[in-house]
Image 1 (cartoon, rainbow, N blue to C red):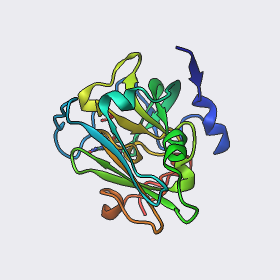
Image 2 (image 1 turned 60 degrees about the horizontal axis):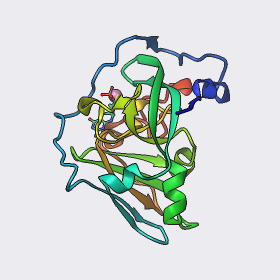
Image 3 (image 1 turned 135 degrees about the vertical axis):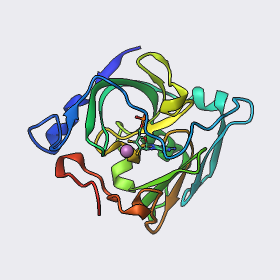
Image 4 (image 1 turned 90 degrees about the vertical axis):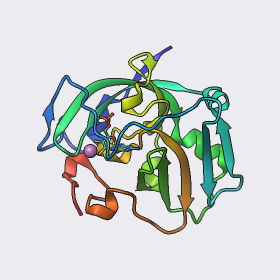
Amino acid sequence: METTDVTDLYREFGDERLPPGQRETAEFPVLSKSGTPSWDSDTWEFTVTGAVDEELSFSWDEFRDLPSVTQRQDFHCVTGWSKFDCEFTGVPFPELAERAGVHDDAVHVMFSALDDYTTDLPLEDCLRDEVLFAYEFDGEPLPEDHGGPLRVVTPHKYAYKGAKWVDGVEFLTESERGYWERRGYSRTANPWEEERYS
Ligand SMILES: Nc1nc2c(c(=O)[nH]1)N[C@H]1C(S)=C(S)[C@@H](COP(=O)(O)O)O[C@H]1N2
Ligand SMILES: [Mo]
């Protein structure tokens, strides 16, 4: 499959590919608030709910039948490391938003996950082709400790905005806070502005 290089999206935010206060690492550390949850491909279900024309639900096979893309992206963790050139395959956020028919009064999005993690973003920050529901990393199924079977990646934001083990997305007409956002982390999380805490 063809890979689209989106590692130049930093140009929207400045001249430096590496955001301030970050150091590049070749590793891919695992950061999880609790352990890696188990999942079952027979019962796994992904839902799109809230301010939409049609709420959607997908089985694992149905989700895998959605149109997908492969992108080369950078990954910035709020704790200070960045990993360049990660190859993720998955479904772009706008594809799902379009299928559900997002209402005009939706302004915010909440992602939920199998480990009860949540994270939120303004809707406009999600309606980008680089926001992926990813199920492959470097051509292999996404490792379970990195969020397999399915995670969100947000290369324009710190990585806590990308829910691992994601199982739902809810469109909101008022903003709400996710797990780390309630604990003082930034709601917008732009790495080039060093929006780490709020
Ligand atoms: N479901 C879930 N998603 C999560 C987290 C988590 O604890 N649970 N941690 C977040 C944080 S703080 C970071 S930095 C990245 C880490 O992703 P990684 O473990 O693949 O490096 O996942 C984010 N997504
Ligand atoms: Mo993090």
